[in-house]
Length: 417
Image 1 (cartoon, helix red, strand yellow):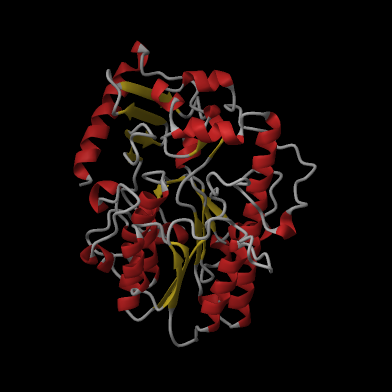
Image 2: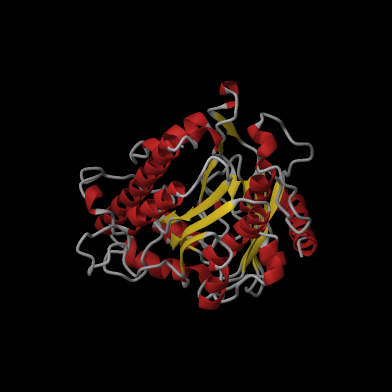
C-alpha cells in the first residue's frame, strides 16, 4: 500500500496472489460497533450495538455469518477479541462455535503477561491457537475460522501501550518514520472545539506529545504489525501442510482505521480518512492466475464481508444483511448498481467522543457534528484535497454540493434502520 518501512512479507504475498480493495471503509470506527457490523452485515442503525455492554439477540445471532455457516455444516472457530457485548454476551457466543478461544475486551491486560516465564506474546498465542484449530480440520468438513488479533490495538494506559514480541524488539530501531503531514498544530487548530477536548487528544498527549514519543510509538506499532504478519505466515504454512491451502479463502481486514498523530489526535472514531479506512485483501486460491494480484477501487465496506463469505460458501445471504457480496469483484466482474457513496455514523461514548455522521462519495465527503449547536459541518473535495485540509462547507461556490450531501445523509440514515 506504499509504506516503505514496515516488514509484512506474508501480507505482501497475499496481496500479490489475491485482490486488494483499496477503498475499503468501516461504517462506524470503533471496535464493538464495527465487529457487530462484520458479524451481521448491518449498519449500526439496524443491529443497534452502540456500546460495549450490549450483545446481539438470539434472533440476530442466527443471521450472522458464523451461525449461518455452522447451520450449513461448517466447522466454526473463533480466536481472540470477540468485542460485541459484556461477559454474558461473550458466554453466549462461546456456545455458538465448535472451537472457541475468544476473549472479552482486549483479553489479557498486557500483550506479554509478566507472570508468564515463556513471555509468549498474545499475538503468538492466538497464532498457536489457530494452528490448533487447523489440526482439527479434515478434508471432508468445510470450516470457517475467525482470528481476531488484538494487535495493533493499544493496551490503553499501560506503561508500554504497544509492547511488541521480544523477537521484534530490534526491528526499526534505526528507522525515523515520517509522520503524517497533518500531524501538526496547524491541523489540530482546524478541528472542532469538541474534538480538541476529546479522548483523541487525551491519547495523543500520552503518545505523540514529543517527537521522541511519536517515534517510539510508531516503531512499536509496526513491530506489532510485523508480529501479526508472522502468524499469518504460520497459518498459511499449516494450511499447506494439511493439504487445505488450495481450498481455503483468506480475508484480511481491520475493524477501524487509526490516527498516528494525524490532526494532533490518536486512535479513531471520527469520519476523516485515517479513521475510517481499513486494509482489505482477499485471497481465493480458486481464482485463475490472470485474476490475481489485482486492485479494486470501488467503495467497499465492513458490512460486505458477511454476505461475501456466505456467497463464497454457496449460501444466500439473509434479507437482514445490508452489505453486498464482494465475490463478483473477485471474479473480475463489475456488479451492476454498485454503491458510489455510503453513510457513516458514530454515537458511542458521546461524553468522550463527539458524535458525527455523514456521507462519503467517490469524490466528496460531508461530515456533521450532531451534538454541536449551531450544527458544525465539513465538506471536502477528496479528489483535490485527499488529506481533508480545506473545509468547503462555508464556501458559496459549493453550496449546492453541501445541500445535496446534507440531504443524502438524512435520507440514508432513515433508510438504513
